Amino acid sequence: MPPCRLSANLELLNGICLPRVLGTPHNAAMSAISRLAALLAGSARTVVFTGAGISTESGIPDFRSPGGIWSRMKPIDFDTFMHNEDARREAWQRTFSGTAGWVGAKPNEGHFAIARLVDTGKVGHVITQNVDNLHQDAGVPAHQVIELHGNAGYATCLVCGLRHQLAELRDSFLEQGTLPACRACGGIVKSATISFGQPMPVEAMRRAEAASRDCDLFIVLVAGGLSRCGTTDGRKVERRRARHYQPRADRHGRQGGRRHPR
Image 1 (cartoon, rainbow, N blue to C red):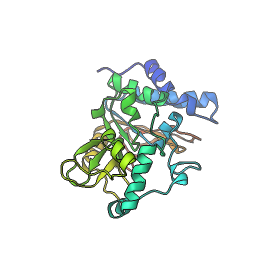
Image 2: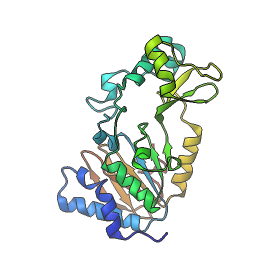
Image 3: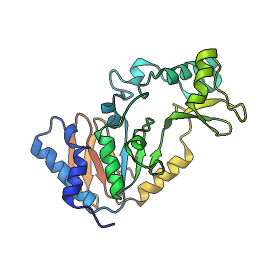
């Protein structure tokens, strides 16, 4: 597919960047967007990496900011979940009550902008730390989304790996207090998210590494982080700090000396 016109890339990127370059003079913001659009125009294999910041405008709080998820409830680590029935009960109560804020959330303009970039063929994969399924809801095909921390929309058996829909588990838990168990092997069932202390998903990590190594442009959308754009030889083009998030891009997938996302 031939590269998109620069003007087309600017239109697509407007949904991701312009409303969020807060505290930045308008001309500087447009310059940053133009630089990223130019990188996109010359890219054939772009990867986008997203974190919690992209979903805050959908009403989903991030994890560590004041008022974030972990300021309202203590995380339940994997070992505690596995060995403490009360902890499992608390975890499922949170899941079915929507305490974390994922229930009913809708994609925002940032998700839709990324979906449009995927639709053009410029972006091959979206690697995300988020578990809210909003990239898929915005129109990114599921096979192009790599979820490093799992998905809160379903559950899996920790013994045999069988997938369970939350609706299948909800009534018996809420009405009878029955902890979810696998319908196939009777094993412990957990929401398909990665908890503290839980091994990272091997296949998702393999796919993320392969996509990162293969890409010629790596864009990171982060919450309150440092923005870096680089040329093919790694020379610094731009460095700025944003109050919300801005793209970080390196045409070899490197981040401040790191080749892959953290």
